[in-house]
Image 1 (cartoon, rainbow, N blue to C red):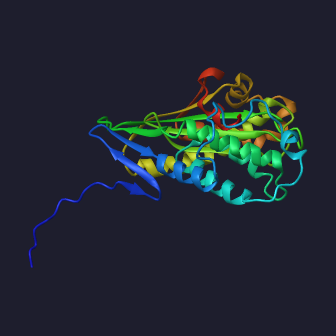
Image 2 (cartoon, rainbow, N blue to C red; image 1 turned 30 degrees about the vertical axis):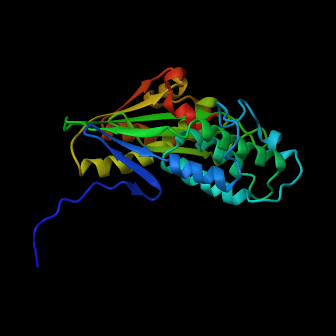
Length: 273
């Protein structure tokens, strides 16, 4: 039996994600998956659009319509898999419409078709991870919240993006469980949840190499002052536990929190259409 070692070729596909390797980059491509999804839901010949949802749309736009009978859950599942693996730009829109799965409406189905139209025009979008030679890595966490954005229950939406060496490795969009009384409160709740995920990924990355710095980027000045100031005003007393957790985490793990303008807030993508 010949025992010669054969050089294995790099993987080209994983769970429907096409892997494109170059000497300096790894690209994650979902164009084929999107084409199959467009064909499955009879949208191959649709006209592309520039955004996944209408700007500033509300839940009332989708709820006040006749009930829809069709493959609503099937399309939601296909879109959600795409959103959580490579396409963070549709995560907010998919989460928004998935809340209507129990009683889908014709308007909500039209919203899902708009996401498909958006995907047709952007199906060549890729996630790009660059090869680095520096053994010291940086972690950046972008956190945002859209205060009382749902006109039905007035619950806020948390969104955050975790960047490792300037490449996204985690993104999240989730409606908060409680009603926030101010934008500052909504931002603090989002920051507290995102920090828990950051600590987990920090421990994983520590096993790979040394972390040079960890930074959190917030676009709410009041939230930053609440976190960095020990003398919390009385109206934030009910958030004292979360604030103490955030302060202790920042100190113990040498994490800095910085202001970033709204135009440069990457996590804004996870809180608005």
